[in-house]
Image (cartoon, rainbow, N blue to C red; front, side, top):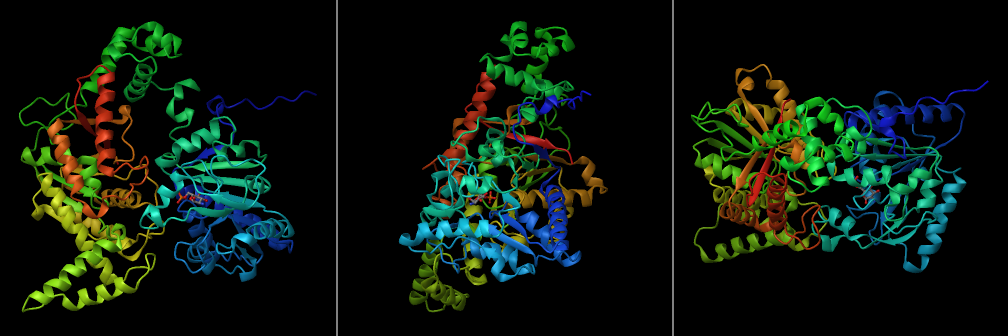
Length: 639
Ligand code: GLP
């Protein structure tokens, strides 16, 4: 009897690794943790060990939190689990706060009943002459444990898995590797400066990973979307080591929507199946076509639509002419020099309503400087146009202040002390901080007093920057959310105190407009956490009278801009307005010279920000819309 293969899901025809998109990282990790728990229990019942391959980084943290919860609340024992970690920085001892050893202990092992001798990580301080033997021994230990049952992976923006950087061969084994510049730049924040990031690491090889019986790669946030799409849909190649999972018989990729955003089924859904041609989808397709054939919208002809397989759109709208006009108008109506609405003007074609005027605008900046980078020009316009702007810095940003800056300040205070009759009020604090700075290494955690001083540095920079953007220092608020004060990068744990502060802020201001960022970002990043808190806070205020009259505008930041079809409000900046914004970014002195996250090598953040805004203007120009120097872009968020 002939059996029929199940019908192929056409929407997945570009995907070479089974890929599942979840509502968010938590949901994905709950599902995965439940599966792992089932397998651990099954093995335990048979009296056999379960061998887990583990990863570091922020990506697996929601999984680890859920495993810890299962251990505490649902009696899941890890006594039969044997763990092998992917990698370790070479040169870092097991007491170094940035070592993967410390990371795994703090984030997972210390909270489980896993026996000490079941935990394996490569040893970062093994002498050069013993590296080969140590790596071979790691392979042997995995084999002796029966091989890895399930390997968890994250992915680097370079497409690395473990520390298998581009160029890693599919037959590579555990070894010493040199880190890619992109990887070192992404780790710069953890090490407070790229120069402190180790240059080498010990990592399982691609073949070691592929030997695991199951492999699950996790990715969250927009920053991973390109690497994920190339791994899933591109050719299998050592240029992107994660693509080697394509030849694994039991590999899976779990994503949140932002990390899935570059997959063909999300990016160009019309290429994989029928779509509902909403105005937004139509705009997206027309902008795509315009850039694909390099023609402004109003010059697109039916052949362009036909040759690029979206003639369906013409059937829907009647003619290319009609379709072009509709799409063109849609983009044109996003442009406004009046981000708070134009008093007295008709508003049917404007992104913001005219009344009330003035508006209470609440601009939220996760860390100081996000606001200036994302909306420095718009802030200026809002103030000039008479709106009541409250600029709120959600976290102090002290973790990003190099020790050198704090040292400089403490020296100034020390000097003042010599020259003045009366000592400065915080004399003792300064003396203690001064002493701490003399003794501490660059990675020792800062004392609360040092963090306080560093926070003050950022406050003053933020005030200077906001003043440059027209906002009076008296209109700035420093919320110092507790999750940040208690935490460190990649392992923040927000709680009810944080939420309560954001809710109180909204209730105090009762804004007509909220400007925020962090949507689509890695959920464990500071902007990602802040956005999550904001959306929970908005939910809590949903039934309050002001809420119905409040619009939420999201800015993106320097590392990425909204895609043109996602822009609902485009605020043009003149050359001098852009220059003023750059000056604003420049006020954040302690952040100067630090390579920004996700930047091209050597690029400073002000350059990156200005380029983004110019790029957006160029995109509008290419669609056939007016040509501006620069544009700040916002997406309207409807909770
Ligand atoms: C490091 C680790 C990888 C991890 C990657 C991504 O390079 N060696 O195993 O996947 O970082 O980190 P994150 O999850 O923090 O984005």
